[in-house]
Length: 178
Image 1 (tube, rainbow, N blue to C red):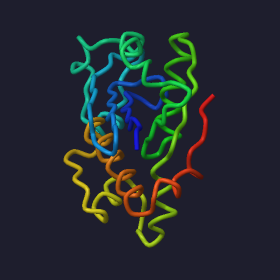
Image 2 (image 1 turned 90 degrees about the horizontal axis):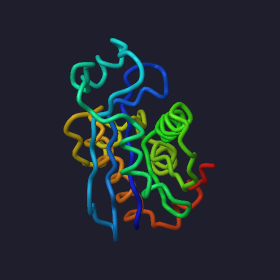
Image 3 (image 1 turned 90 degrees about the vertical axis):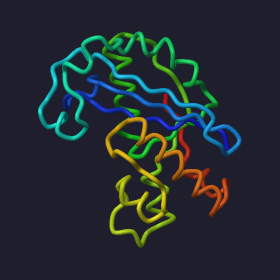
Image 4 (image 1 turned 120 degrees about the vertical axis):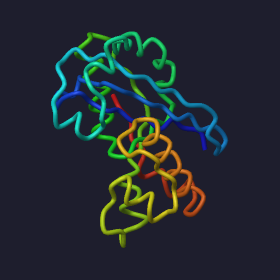
């Protein structure tokens, strides 16, 4: 399998307030590369968000803006590229909102939500939150709500599902982002 696992953290409830992003690149069923960056959002930080991920306004003072990050990561978001996230509607929504907020061209790509796939493959789990799924599957998750750790855990969930159920069983979970 070849795909990119994505995770955003946001500074506030505003979806365009991305303050960190991680991508874990998987090629031939192996983690091949990682990308992580703090992002200086175009909004103030909300204490609830800070409480979740621990990123403060002073942490991103010298961080690049989302448009600067987009120049680097845009090549990963192509029509036939599979982008995976745990709770993909959130992460895809953050990306879409950032692109709209900064008036950047929208992109089209394939997406898969590992929350949905884990609900199908593991209905007996008490919940399908990232940390719960990782615990049940024996997948390491060092710091939940650290974008890099979360994207790596998400990649490992999909690899686990593909290895145990087959890539064909994952196809019904793939959809196009327009």
